[in-house]
Image 1 (cartoon, rainbow, N blue to C red):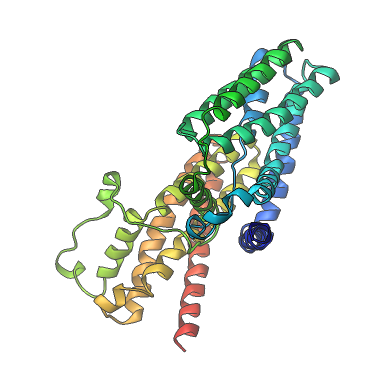
Image 2 (image 1 turned 135 degrees about the horizontal axis):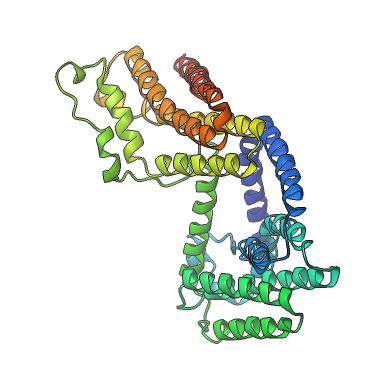
Length: 400
């Protein structure tokens, strides 16, 4: 029975990734990635021509690679498996091996990308033999790290602590092998010691609860990453209070406590109390801000800022979809036009605040062209207006 389980489950996971991949890697994002990637490589090659060999450059290359030498383990197990698969525990070997191979393949693309960037950095001051040893050791670390992190699930060792230890060990091993090839021996000894240590503390029996819980954590982490680009309905969201956002939640009084303006307050409350949305928008601002600062190119900064605003407006629209269709209209039944008008007022204010941040970043990076930053609020207003109309059109079609 376990041998027949893996194929349907891996196909289900591939379909899930393909489904969300269509929304993430749409034409707009692919154009942005092409432009940003090309400018990044071009600027990096230009910087490399001015750099001198340095241990700090080796440290950067080692850290960049080490960040992606920690592949996660996806067992694809489900809560019910802890009950129905118990009689087949001794026959789960093939299933777990297939899950391990699949997990290794999921992380290989990011590791290869990091290796390419490190390869460019290491052309400064290092020959072909040193670079090949570096890449070989990185491949060994990638494989051993995976097996160590997989075994840790079935022990009492903290997964987070072991991840930090492996990362530090990866950075040190990679930078040492760049200094002299003989350090490769010590790196292999460290890896063997870590693997033996964790293996010696494995539980004699398969810890179903630990593996199932770990799979749920990994799946929710994937959904949270996807939710930065598109709406995901599978995340178990809970509202929570963030005290630093309380100033956004004024107490409605007088005319504001009426059918025309009450929904605007409710939209502010949804945003401030949402489980993920405020942090998603903050991460997007930081991500696109880093790209604008790193590239330093005028046209790339404009495209990056405009695309960042586009993605954030797309995220904001889920507030209307999540609340205007659900409980609020039942508890506070008002004309739909009041809800729509309240959302427009709220979203325009929120988007303006976001565009203001992008405008400030742009003005700091390109002070001589600071006047171009005025295009960001205009773009945010027009984009939000288009998305608002699309949401209302969808709502009208559903109501018909």
